Image 1 (cartoon, helix red, strand yellow):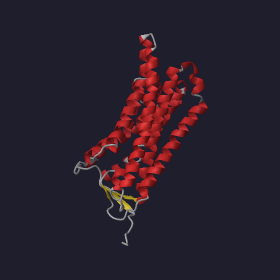
Image 2: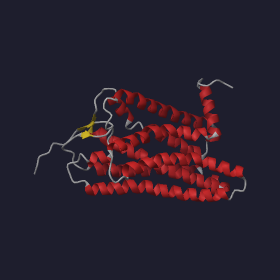
Image 3: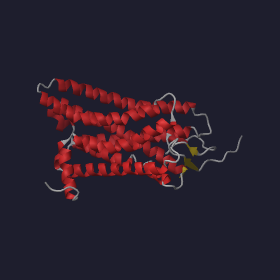
Image 4: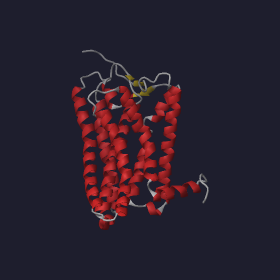
Length: 310
């Protein structure tokens, strides 16, 4: 039996084929990260400060903003750290934490989008019973459930990945620790685990997407029953922001984890969009088409002396 020495740290090689572009990428990604944090913090402040926004829809949007603050924070600080010329080394425990929190927050957001679709379904299809069905207790349970199931999924995927022995190469050909690149470094046959991981990672978003699709099928049917064009327009406008956010969130998952032949450069590019750009765009998506959020944001900015009084 061979005597292997176990890996205690990994080296993040970064985004493939970007050698010499570190300074430009540092400025670009830092800008994205700052806008993401500021945008989602403003959405949180707007919702918390306005009693008119203390409804189930904005409660879930509030949790989405919290996830969008922490989700890019899993990989961005370390990436910005080594892009600025510092060490690319990450400890074994740090790598485990990156993978766990990335999938925990990603899965939580996926379940949260499903819950938000259910909330819109109840609001449009059963408007008179909305406050009864979406009570404070039910909203709290649904919000807690998204985190619980996200945690279970993340524990399963992290355990699946790091039960393997890592005793040889320790250079991660990526900018953070994720399942596909970590399995390449394992000193064991990973074919069975790759299949289990593929099914697990694919099944969860697919199930969520089918539930969302079902909710929106009923929503569209109900909207088409509305006789006034103004009523239809208002109903569609309450759902358009959510649908846009869903497409931006689910497309990267399909491109990264369900492609037959992995492409490291494409994966890294899509992952950057998923980690930094989508969380940055969510506050814009949910505020630009929503008069109540825009009004509350204006009040927050005026209170912070960032916007002149009208």
